Length: 219
Ligand SMILES: Cc1ncc(COP(=O)(O)OP(=O)(O)O)c(N)n1
Ligand SMILES: Cc1ncsc1CCOP(=O)(O)O
Ligand SMILES: [Mg+2]
Image (cartoon, protein in one colour):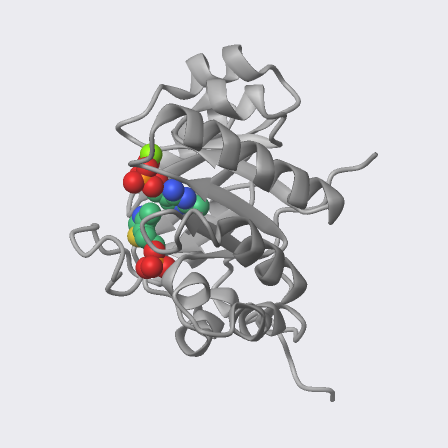
């Protein structure tokens, strides 16, 4: 089966934002709203709970043919049959993760505001790179800030898909898509909302229109 493309709403299900009791249902709602990728981000839970939830989200994502990525932990990603793992500067190096997961699973890499890091990540075998935070993030207020122009430069320099993250709303997200973001990674804007499905739909709609800056009017 061919894998869906890395494009659209990338919903990050963070257990600091959504309770473990509601997590699986919340992810199902985000998918119903149009999320095309899901990441499981659990920085604090005990090991048995982390694994149980990782498995539960794997099942929901598989049922809906949505890409499923585990944050930080390649062993957990492999254990639950996830599509891939996302790693940053405090996590295992790309080569180690690739060795652990083999050639078929996705490896996503945080590149913050650094195009050079992304060029290196692509050369090292990353399947996508992520930049941000583009806006103040309620989840990671101390995150380094990235400039929207970075997306344009990344788009023209890289072949791998480019993900934007950090404080993204349906309003400010349109500018990121227009500048070349293939996917918008969102926590608060989806999972801290009372109607998760409706919130997800507003992001998904940003990918339904052709918003890129090369768009031209008919002559
Ligand atoms: C899609 C996406 N982009 C960036 C991050 C951040 O990863 P990292 O820098 O490793 O920070 P933590 O999320 O682990 O705190 C991400 N998780 N997903
Ligand atoms: C994990 C991460 N890395 C940079 S910002 C961020 C958090 C994004 O969450 P939110 O969508 O709530 O700003
Ligand atoms: Mg990490």
